[in-house]
Image (tube, rainbow, N blue to C red):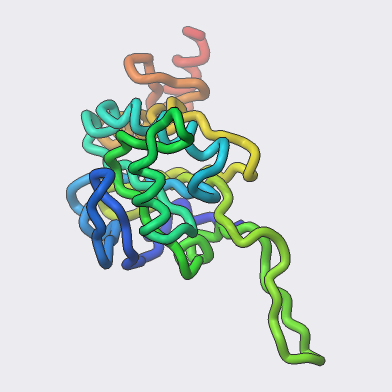
Length: 211
């Protein structure tokens, strides 16, 4: 699994559905560079079980991300038509109707590969000169916090059965913004409004003495 923290987020242009009902061609995270932070997350498939709980949880907290100048963008290997159908299916029927943030279509699986979250791998058979995919060719539950310069500052990848904590994504965004604004680093279990510490030995000693 590649570590992208500290590196430019991989570039892509892909189909997407925005505002729950609009098709967009050549959607890219480039539009946010210099303007917004981005939470870019992958999920395995539309019309599944854990995935709608995560997507609806992000939608429920979307106003909190937006208040922090952060865009939320989801991505799976499904087509834009599958995204559109799921977005227009009522929740009581297994849909995610009401979700407004963009869902990107990674039908070619290249975005998942470039972010190194594609489950499984290719194996080359030299004798038969063919490659086969081993495993389930869907995206793990990867999440990437990207700053306004397009740099990945935090990433986490869950296996397929393990749903993410949306509040933790908010906490990491708060920690990054606090560091950028104050130059102080955020200790274990830090939450917005709590004391941080100066990145010096004296600062650490002072913080530990208080706690």
